[in-house]
Length: 97
Image (cartoon, rainbow, N blue to C red; front, side, top):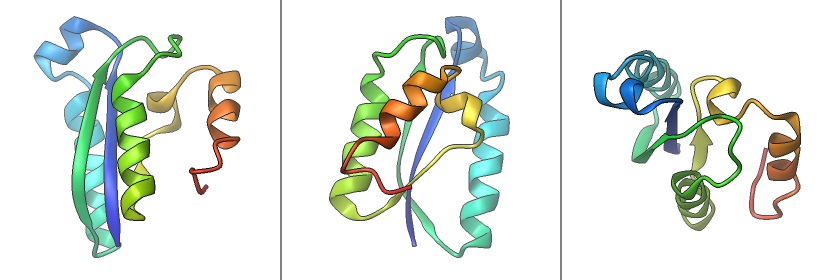
């Protein structure tokens, strides 16, 4: 099974220091190992969970769709804090959930 990993940290400081990122990477790696899969690419965004514009997420979703890989995130709150944002993603015809 192929996976595309998406990581998000909220602040520039978290992005520079790696705070939160290490835990996300560990969770994703453990899941991929349990599934005997492989991560074909990973994308990291340093952005507030409230903002809708996520260029790295768009790239991750596109690659997952093009390759038939599963888009994998460590926790739902790393994808977004907004139910509206998440529900909009669910309507994307290229995204299988």
